[in-house]
Length: 545
Ligand code: GLN
Image (tube, rainbow, N blue to C red; front, side, top):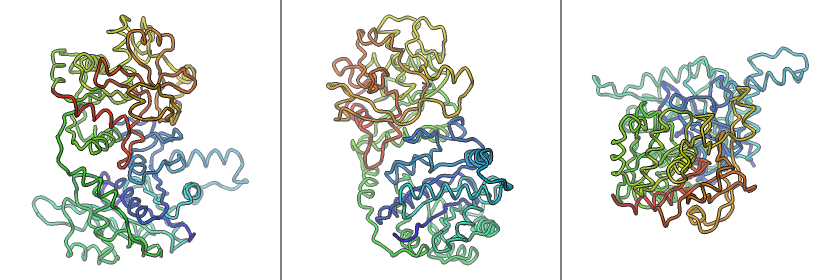
């Protein structure tokens, strides 16, 4: 194997313009050329992981197979690259410092002064190298969160500079920039990109490729201008216009020759790119097919659609993957469950939806409204899919309204509920008492055994599965028999048989009513949609209002 190659993706001008999708798309292209690719995300936060961050501020917390709680970009990497990434591929400032301080306390620096520079960038590079070796990656992508010029990410840019200084032929820098068209001028302005390129020069780095995000494609004149002022070849300025689906982005980049350009920069032989399966998937997303209205019911929903799409990105992407697989399209509405608490007659609005989904969540707010919506879905036979909290609340609804357990609840909400049908996991009690919250939930991948003859088993087509988790509470074993007697089927259980992983109603009583204690959305991929999402959307397509 040639020496490993590294591509740093950095942001210029402003954040929120799709650096994660850009990194993922570059990865997809290089993978489609037959390279072994891995991707790393660096977040410049003191938080040791993303688990303690509010999703409405930071976006979804994406859980890796090994349980690390990370940024939503890791989900994009896994989906675009069709890989499963380990925790070494995600780092925050907090994580890096934590490790350096741990080693210092262990006398591992042998009595020397431990300094921000070079010891922090060296730890960053150690992690990058470990991630590269783990996958034997020919090309390692490293996305540096934030924007050039921010005080926060300077040590990460310094790491990139140090690596480039050591291996000048093996490191490429891609800068994602933004080219605005101010309304009163009506013309594309390249100056912010020029300033960003200079800031990058100021930390000792030169962009090899500039990705110019804009509402429309870049014309030749603008490419030339960026090239001259940013000290780069015009063909290495790649147009990144707005697109209707993020999955089109790799195809767009490839139109501008991204894959070959990067091969040239890194001294790799050019190879043909085979994106045919990807193209086929993107075509499906444009094809006709019915548009089905789906309701996603939950709290947090006053923050606006834009924020919500980020908070539940894996759920939304999984729904899309399953819709394309079923040759339909979806119109997703976010419904704030607190509305049903204030005015129960509003529940009737739910009858217009072909399916109802309740995603994961925490805490008390809006929960009674969600339970009312789940009851509506059950009684009116609207396909229902509950994820984690969405499963726990479906169990509570069943307990209260089908099993005669008045006042049934989760101890997360009510410690002295008469029927604690959702109880705290035994190993969580001490952690909660000690307020030891960070990274201590039941996290990551666990096995699950499916019962034959159930909706879940039919969907997966196999008996043993494994899925990713993120929760502290579970179905209380003391109530299982009672819940089963009243018609709830636990179709998926932990291998020990103790933890209930899937709850469903038989098809004889409901077309599709299923909840999972795990988060299936973390394992759905464009080219291999998740079987439970596919089964849900199939039921949605068959349900008529
Ligand atoms: N709040 C619930 C628990 O901790 C559900 C968590 C979730 O939906 N991810 O068990």
